[in-house]
Amino acid sequence: MRIAHTALWTPDLDAAADFWKTYFGATVGEAYRSSRRPGFISRFVSLPESGGEIELMTGPWLPLDPHDERIGWDHIAISLGSKAAVDALAERCKADGLLKSAPRMTGDGFYEAIIVMPEGTPIEITI
Image (cartoon, rainbow, N blue to C red; front, top):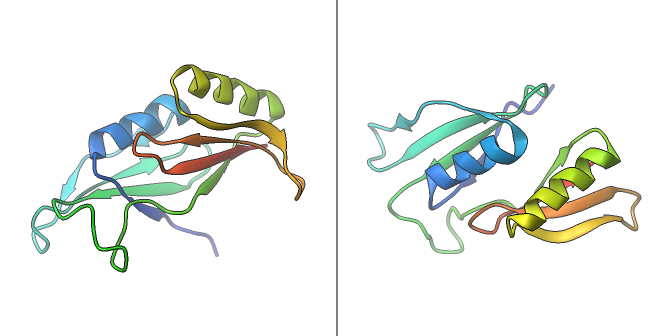
């Protein structure tokens, strides 16, 4: 078994797609517009070498009631493969104002930094 994809609500589909292309080298698919749910648009992001995909979704109803669908997940962790890669991406994101927490060894044994998407959704980058 494997996770086929995860989905993320975002108020700005283009900014979210650009974020994943710019910082992770992701490939972003064409926009899909639902005929059954007017205003719903999504794009799939494919991460290099992982087979993992993220569905970026938007609609004119965002933001939503907090008990309904919501923008973002709590976080996702992306393994970059090395401490040097974590440090380099953290530094790049710091320069762009997207670093939330500098690289560190966590209490549960992970070397990680936390960066944020343009709307603030956190992403842990780790070895």
